[in-house]
Length: 415
Ligand code: NIG
Ligand code: FE
Image 1: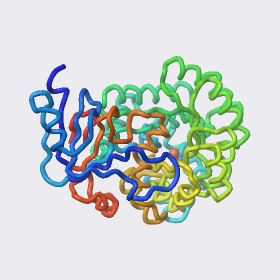
Image 2 (image 1 turned 90 degrees about the horizontal axis):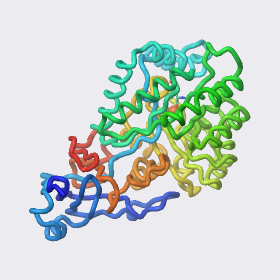
Image 3 (image 1 turned 180 degrees about the vertical axis):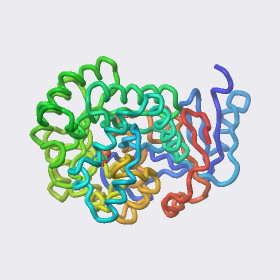
C-alpha cells in the first residue's frame, strides 16, 4: 500500500458525523454526534476511523498515515448531496422570469409555448460539446459549494434520440468529473409539441423506443415523471411507471407541485421518492408516510416561482423521511444553491439544524439509494465539506453566506 493513500486529516473544531440517526421523522440537534477536536483516518478514499484527533494520531503513526493538518476553526460535515436537479440544459429563461415577476403565472407561460418547451428547443439545438461544457461548469460550481453527489435529470430532449444524447453527456461528465452524478430519465416531463399523438401514445413510445435502450446502454436506473394537470395525469403515469418498474427501474415523481395528485399515485405504487409537494396536505403526507415514500422538498422552486414551501415540518412530524434538494433548472429554480435554500426552508418551516443537515446528506443518500455516503463513519466514502467556524449553528444562521472553505471527495482535498 502506498503511503499517500493512507492519511489522517484534522484537527477539526467539530465533526458532525450524522451517523446512527433515524432515516425518518424529527431530529433534535442534541441527537447529533459531535466530535470536538476531531480527526479522520482514511485509506484509499474510504474512512477507516473517526475520533479525537490526538487519539487517532497515536493509533495511526505518521510513517504509515500521511498527516493533512487543518489550520484554524473548521466544522466538518459529510459531503452534501443534491438529490434533484435538471442541470443538463442550454439557454436562459430570464424572459420567463421577467414575465413571472410581472405577474404572469408559470402555467400560463407554458400554455403559450414558453417554459419547459423553450428550454427543450434550445437544448436540442446545442452541440454536445457545449452541453458538456455547460454541465461541467454547473457541476464544478456545486462542488465548490460542498455538494459532492448530484442527481441530474434529463427531460429537455423529449424524444428518444435527444434523451439518449443528454443522458450520454451526463454519463460522460460523471466519468470525467470528481463529483458523483446520478442520472435520472425524465423523458416524461411533458409531451413535446412536435410529437404526433396524445400523452398516452407519447408514453407508449418512450416505453418501447427509449427505456429499453437506456437499460441496454446503462444510462440511468431511475425514471421520473411530471404528474400535473399541465403534464401527465395519474392514470397516464400509472401505466408508464408500471412499465418502467417492470423493466427494473427505480421510480420517482414530480408530485403535488400545483395540484394535489401525484402523491396519491406515488403512495399507491410505493415509489422511491415524491418530489415538490408544495400543495400537499395532511392526507397526502399520511399516504406517503404509510408507504415509506421519501418526501423531497424543493425550496428553490418555491423561491423561483414565489410559491408556498412544501410542508416540511408536517412531513417530519408525520414521521416521514424529508430530503431537501435544489431542483436547479432554468425555469422554476434558477438559483441553485443547496445550503442557502435549505437554510431558508428551515426558517419558514421551523426545522432544526439536524433535520436540515439530514435532508442534504444521509437522507438524500437514501433517496438516491447510495448507502456508501451521507455520514462520516468507518467504511463510508471520504466525502466532506468544511466550514470556517467553530460552531455548526453558524452554518444555517449565515443562510448560505458562509460557504465551505474545504471540500474533500474520495479523500482528495479539492478546495
Ligand atoms: O421541477 N415541474 C417540472 N419541472 C421542473 C421545471 C422545469 C422547467 O421549468 O424548465 C421543476 O420545477
Ligand atoms: Fe424538478
